[in-house]
Image (cartoon, rainbow, N blue to C red; front, top):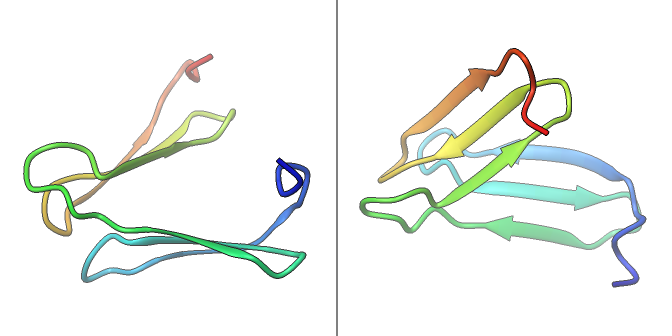
Length: 70
């Protein structure tokens, strides 16, 4: 719970695998691996309407939702 207030310093999405890495300013990093063979491996969204979904294999879907999801 102590990591929740830490700002994200860098976001990396590996093109070959759609793996997601979130690096925090305080040093820790979270790696989300896309091991899915038929469903979403991970999903990430922003309040402005940007939606990213890692799908089977290395497929990455990007949407600009208007109006944004709440």
